[in-house]
Length: 112
Image: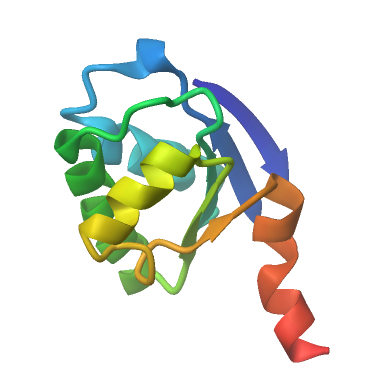
């Protein structure tokens, strides 16, 4: 996991070595809490496969982040991972962007 901090955002790049994903939601929540930020971009360009366990962890984290007025956005998903997200009907709940920059600035574009 590689972690970068931007203004009001935490940007985390997931790697295949972050498996198993069984406590990923708790690990990411702990990072958000430590940085006092509840907006998270998960860069997933190194993830080739989207197991159901990972999807479940992201849904749990998404709910937790929303309760604190935050946001969870994904970036860099492969076409296969995007398809898996769509098949599970999570593509609307977990917004995806091509780059971290697009993910961070998506809300600002709507407000201007």
